[in-house]
Image: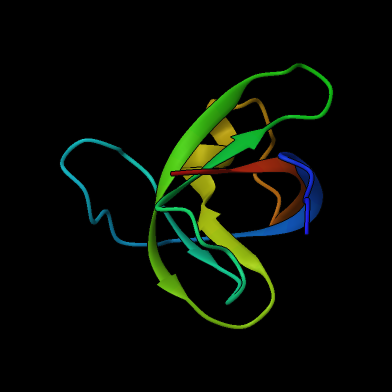
Length: 87
């Protein structure tokens, strides 16, 4: 099965622990995500940031509010962003 490299999904923002010395952001991903990292891309300005996968559970993406700020979002609790799995 061929899947698109970039999907547009709803992302929830919360306070998550930093689990990597190399990447400043962490992410909880749905069970069907296989990548070790996820790139989040703002749909309008194109800014992006990468987060380290720390857990796989449920059906939604959850990452830190600071990641949202870095790519140009306000302090909202959720947003629709493009996501890409990074292996």
